[in-house]
Length: 499
Image (cartoon, one colour):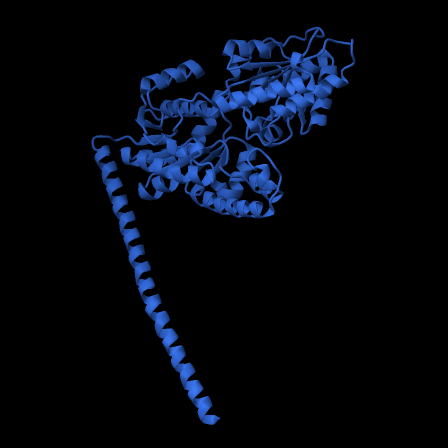
């Protein structure tokens, strides 16, 4: 028995030695391979940095001024984000006249002169200095339609390739991401050694999106088939958490962070964790165009109109507006006053938006309000202004709107606004002004119907007081205020580049 045990021990020891030898033979090549790959990666990074710096040095020969580049692949789109771009450029060119300015854009088939003419026509903005446009060929890489699944990750990876294209075309001294492509920041900061800044209109992912998936709440960005399935919901939550971690890493590469509202700031501070570099810079709203509409005390209107302004996108929740309006009509006593009308004003970007409008028209017929609801699509500015001048209520129903330029325009036009009790409207816009009310908030069908009934029941004098408060409060969102806040925020990177 003793000899048997001894042989077994010797055999076990030999097996253990063989196992260790086998593991060692596997580990050593893996370690050396990892070290080799790491060395190769470092060599590529250092080589790329040297190449990009050499390109910048060649570009700087004969120039004493810094180059400021904006990454804005859709600069010819004509939306609120583009207004921020042109106002920012105008402010920088007025303050830093010696700097050169570049816009990376993916717009094809247009010239720089046509883009600037579009900015003058749409926003009445004329730049005091020249701008160079770098036309990118691979903008399709950031199109959501290219990624039917894992859209956030696909677009973010696509933006890295698009950012690399921009960087190889021209190496700037200061890089400003003005459209929210945070994954481009490490390229410009660490490979090209640029000073970086960001203007965040809307976080790519937010803690609200995480909570929606965690609570398995179906919304426009959380399909019902996923919210119903616990396994798919768990997988999506893990994906969102991992993406949020990466988003925080790349966002922290920004030397200066500007956000468009308190709501956006709260989310960016949670994800990017850069409190000392983050400031709120409200977007410039074209309120001046509406301030010439007279605030008449007016007699009681024969017929009130409720106006909604917003693109026909799912998150704008036009269905909620129609349902709430139908409940309002049920509350209106027959014969007292002529029933109000609901006017839905917005743009249709594509066939998908037009199909959505068709479904909304069908909903109006189903609820029996089709004769009291009007759809006005892609109308010119003068017609929009006319509708706002004659309307009583400005209606907004988007949950967690990051800011809400349309609400500001309604307030400037002299309407009583009724907005969603969340996001920018709650925290920044529909807030008391010098102790007086500037509008109303609601968050469900019954709440909206009751608020509409209350607004329409107010005396003309009471409504006038709210309208005056609202109009006075929107001066915070003027072009002048934006430019002052923007210049103050970018001073650390602009000042350093001037030295």
